[in-house]
Image (cartoon, rainbow, N blue to C red):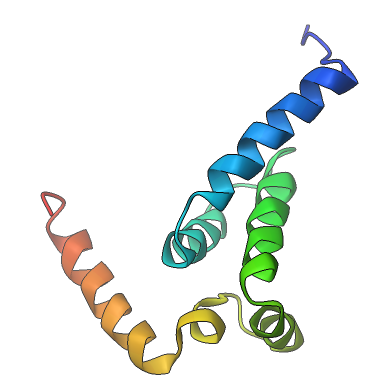
Length: 101
């Protein structure tokens, strides 16, 4: 049986999670969001995705609104642009091929 957390404990956990999310770069937040797309649905997944989206909105509300109005799964293009996105996707492919990087 799972032990139930108190409201105070939940608030502390959320504050720590939001601080961790806020400490990440925009590119890391986007990568985290993209990785969350690959995860199985769970009780906590919507919370985490919400924290990521909240932080992206704090950084660039217009980019978030444009992304939400689009049909795109990833916010990448709206926050870092097409040119940077292509370079980063190529880098991601390269580093995925060589886990030592």
